[in-house]
Length: 176
Image (cartoon, rainbow, N blue to C red; front, top):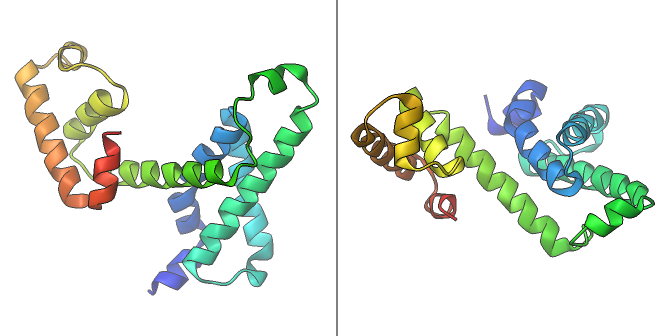
């Protein structure tokens, strides 16, 4: 099956982009449920309009991100009426640089999560706890009831596997 026909499969699209689009929407809205709803609506919109969207994976991805961005901006415009939201808003969501950086961050995190899921379960759990949750080796060892040396060994093994499976630029961003 070609990459183009795979990209057209709704289940494959959903699996590939749902988490990324939720994260992208969450960066605008700050509300997980609202972000999920917006991401789902982007897929519904795509399915309704896919005849007018080029069948190329990049065109589909751009359509999905644009749909989510526009929906988020509409939500934000509506909520600007509420004084509390306006006071809490620190950056202008319409800033194209911010949007692009948020898209990049969503893509990087999506790729890291995809590769993390390919690691052995124990290694995956220790990498998540150490690098994503920010726990120290001693805290991980205590929570998992294992030795600190096991934690260190699993972290080293996990990083080695990540280095092999991730694009070098994404691997270096993992630590930022």
